[in-house]
Each structure stands twice: as structure tokens, then as C-alpha cells.
Image 1 (tube, rainbow, N blue to C red):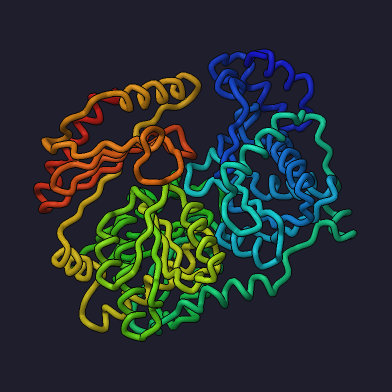
Image 2: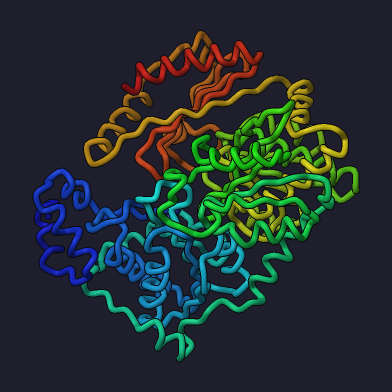
Length: 552
């Protein structure tokens, strides 16, 4: 069935008023119809993510119902009984969460649903805490407002494995979205097949986060923004609990709002997302500004240093957190003898040097926090979960402690503010500490470049370019000799799962890693240089010339 046939089928069968309106609006725009109907929305280990709207390749009540019915069919095949569900502040997130609960209830599967929006790490935690067989989080994380998504967790609190995702995908493919039956939410809430998450689960999550607290914070001035998302309650609460007395909230970005009116791209990695909060920080002479993304699993930070504000990269913040946790726990005698930290392969190699200093094993995994969670589960199976101290990825995702199996901005905010407060007592800032680290181990710099390939034609072009680069002999990049080319789809010498990643290890500890995004129509380029600040910038400029030439 081609995209026009799919479109006509939806026009005939869709009875949801909003979807019908959207179908009518695109009737004279064949390119729009093609983008919305040229394929089914893909399902993988990260679940689904797509643009809101009518069509098989978009997020709407029918595709959510189809996905949930496929998930329910899989869950019934393994005799699963319970699912934990929450959602973020995005458009239709609550609608999709309730839709999922109603489909599950219709299939005889109990759904625990949060009464209001909650952070993604709470779903990872809550799935384990309530002994559920799976978890669903309706979120598109830090994507622009036109996106939403559907993330699935296993009983272990990790995003589902490739094997499970394949089975769910097969089940989804057999579902007709217009034949899916949904129970009545209020009726099932009354009968008990749908239940709101009990208060003790929230209390225990908060207690487990606070367990990572090591220093009271009575000296630091903090500005915080939840970027109109789910951090609005947990983050201020935990900061108040650990002693922050001077906390200012960015009021325009406090209340949940899926339109993100002051921040169209609510990604704390982007300077534009931090602009309003930075102005608040300047106006209030704050020591530090922190912002969590809409589902509060990532955090961005800007630090006042020598009178101006410096935004830390995800790598820099991760180095600060790692250094603090290892240094402080070593001082206290609470660092496990066989401690383990975990990072992704695109995250700074400087972290491994810090870990080595404290005798901590650093494990490298594929991009995606599910792989960090998998390492935690392996430690747990060996009776060693207490050896896990920290996991992080360069895209502003961090986890300290073992309460979740996904990144958690709530605990990251608490620990980072503690460290900043402790350093302030010493007359230092996080920038000073980073400079000390660079002085000890070398000036590692990192840069991320992305190229977008949207729509059906863009998707085909992206695959073509990656295949071409994979087969291309490359001897030098940015005047650096290619010492090693590693293709994780091909001759995988790292012992990692097969993945669409090409890694070029270069002379002078430089590196270029190329991979497609798992959630957006992007190719991402991770650049590392490790000489001096000026030389690193020269290397990045030459790397970008190389990238632009090859991926035109």
C-alpha cells in the first residue's frame, strides 16, 4: 500500500475530530501526505518518537493505540500483569498516557498511572518499585514542541533490549489501528484495573535521591528553570532539602507547557534554551544557573566565573560530577574497593583518566543510557550494585546512585549544586576545578556537529552518505593521521553490540565519531582534540571542513 492509499484509508476510517481536521488540511499537499504516510512510525529500544499529527509516521491517538496494543500482545505472551505509566508536559502527553492505560486495561493488564506529569527517571524507578512488568513514558525528551514520543521500559527499569523491541515491533505490525479497543478510563479507575500511583512511590524516589547527598548547601545562590517541564516540583524540593536558601525560579518557564513559549527547542545543550535563565542569573547575581529538559532527565548549567557566565558542556559537567563523587567518597572512605563508573563511547576519554586516578573501573558502552543501565543490571546480578558510583553521557545525562536505570536530572542537580557550594567555600568555582583537571591530565576539548536529513528523501540520503563513508578509505582528518578506524557494524574490535557507528582514532589523542541519531533525522559528528585551546579550535575547524565535504 503506498502513501496515498494509506492516506485515503485514514480519511475513510478516522473518527477522532482532531485527526480528521489534520487529514483535511493536508489534502492538497502531496509532500505533506508522503511524509506523514510513507512508512509506519518506527519502534526500537528507545520506543517511538515522531511529529505530532495525523498519519502512520506521526504520533496521534491511533498510532499510540496501535503501539500499545502491540506491546500488550507481547506482554500477554510473557504473562505480564502490570505496567507503570507517566508523561511529560508535551502536547497530548496526558491524552496518550491515558490512551495507553485504556488499551492495556482492555487487555486485562493493570496500569499504574501518575496523576500528573513526572520526570522520566521516576518511571524507571517506579517500574522497579511497584514490581511492574514494563513501564511507559510519554515524552520526546528535549525535542522541539512539534514532537512527542513513547518510551518503553522493561521490568528492570531499563529501556527495552533489541530482542524485546524486535518482538514488540512484530506484534505492532499485526495491529490495525482502527480496530484497537480501549476501555473507559474512569470506569477502570473505579474497578481497579487502572490505579493512580501511590504516594509512597514518590516518597521513596525522593528518599533514594537524597541518599546521594554529601554536603549541605547554605552558601550558594541558584537560579533554576524546568523549561516548562517535569522538573518543576522535584528539583526545587530536593534543593531546599539540602539547604539551598537562595533559590530563584524562572517564572516564565515554571509551569508545564508543551508549547514551550519562551524556548521553542527546550534542549539544555543549546545556548538558546538557556537564554532567559541566564538573564535571570545576571539580574540576580546568581552563582549558578541550572535548567532541566521537559522530562527532567537532562540538565544544563551555567557558572558565574570572573564576573561572567560560562555554559558547561555535557562533558564538562560530567567531569565535575565524576571528580566530586570520587574525590569526596574517597575522602569519606565510602568509595567501594571495586568501584565502577560507566560512560558512553562518545563521552570524553578524560573521564577514564579521572577514574584511573581513584582506582575506579571505567566501562565504555554504546550511545544511549540503556547501555549504562544494562551495566548496572549486570553488577546487580553479580551482587555488586553497590560498586556502581556514576554513569554519564556527553548529552547532559547523568545518574548518581542506583535508584534508577536511566539518567536523572533531579539527582544531578542536587549533587552539582553541592559541589558548587563546597567549591565556593574554598573561593573557587566549577570552572576553576575544570582548569585544575585540565592542568593535571591535558586540555581535552569536544565539539558536536549535526546535519539534518528530514522526511522520506532525507532518510534515504542519510543512509546513502553513511554507507559511502563506511566504505571510504580515510588516511587523515584535520591534518591528523588516522591511527584506527572502527566500524561497529563491521569488524567490531571493541566487543560492543553491533551499531551504526564509525570511529576514527587520530594522532594527538584526537577523535572523530560519526553516527545517526536514534531519535531525530540527524547524523551526529563527535569531535575531540587534546592539545591546547587554540590548537583544538584549529583542529575542529579542519574537522568541520572534512565533514562538510564528505556529507554535503
